[in-house]
Length: 296
Length: 320
Image 1 (cartoon, rainbow over the protein chains, first blue to last red):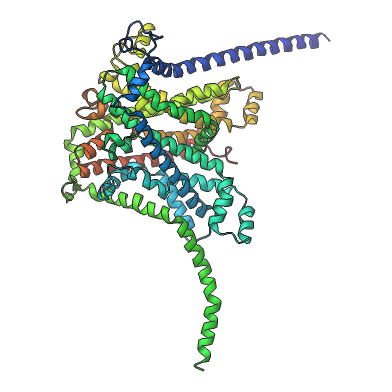
Image 2 (image 1 turned 180 degrees about the vertical axis):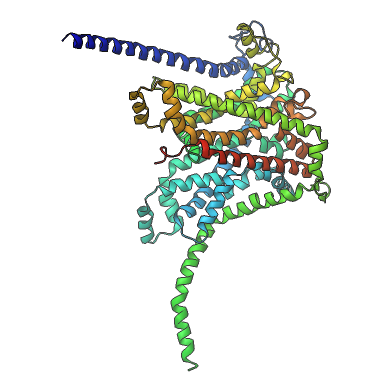
């Protein structure tokens, strides 16, 4: 009886100690999470704060955390400035992003369908080549591709940025094909027996079933086009044709030290993407995770 | 006799034809679906790859047709272009520090996010949000934060008793500045991939280790980490490829690299050198040679990492 009583006592202390430790661990974990969140959020907060300051409060010691007065007018000034014609740039960006996204989704679905559901000679070889190009660093094709588009007279237009995407891109083809492989073959076979052609099966059966994957692919292409800096930089030469990010860069070159306006413009360029992220967060995180799958 | 043969041939053909053409028709239909992709592979991949070998051995300034000069571009690159080695040095420095550091930060963040705590989704969003920012916008923001005189970072450093540094205005500190920036903007994706990897570690394994008396670090070191090696492998390759080709931040922070990319060309990254030669000086031949060398180095490096993976990447349990 004695030993067992002391045993329970020991067990109770142990349990209590474990509980306190778990509690302490929980508090520690939250403190760490909050600390890191602060580190990540402060630069972003600084972007917002600076965008609302009068110019003479941008660089001060001590720091100004709350602008006085709060300059909402910075946004009007930045976004209506002739050097940063926001609506025009936004229109250009939307045109680029929508055309790029549509091309990627449509060509991706058609090509992936052939790899996933059609039997033909040379399929494994062609799919192998597709996988290999996925690993290919794009740098080696850069200059000849530029020269090709120059020869076609397409430099100065959006065609070099959009047209290639209508012919498929390796990673998206791979991703969509993997998704289509998970759709039960019976579903498409039944339609085939009923006399449906491949196009009908693709649009009527496949596309509705792999909608989440198409959304992921489309979302990423949209973001990539929105954030694309390099291609517009090398292919576009008229300021009126620029997309937002390139316009933002040009704005900064013109208004070197007006950091309050530059920050307002930067936030305006970022804001739509953040909204899109919150609307489609689920697909977003799924998509990033999927892109990691090919390695794991 | 003469009249019988044609009929039997006709018969044979009649039997055989649909068999051949059935397979052929299948092939044709499939290749119709694949035609855009085959076109793309030929025109946007195969042709440029082959052409880049050719252009790299020419002097080609766009205005005049390419002139064959053999290996001259490579000789110039390695022996008489001081900016070449500057760019190689800068890019190597940037890659060697930003890739391991970025992966470490991404892994630590993922481990933090893999806890069962309330509101974890909010933290995940906050950690990931900077990765969404267009690179021009985030670089401009960091130019404000890293202002050598009155930037938030320097004033923060001073507040905790550290010296202020010149960041993007100093040849010694511009690359650390760029790396600091990359930790804020560039770790989100790797973090989410690590997080997915961590979620795949079977709880039963870590619990078994716990019952065997393994402490937190031992569980991480001997259970979680080995299972995470495929993810580390993936992030490593992606990190190397991305950082070798870093362009946007260096271009924006180095003011377009028109005369100099950052103080004393300290932000002259390899891609910037290619860009400058191709699109500022229209030295397409030389730029192709530069790109080709970068391509070969990247392929070799990837192969080395892939080869080395036999020794440190574990696949046995994660596969299902």
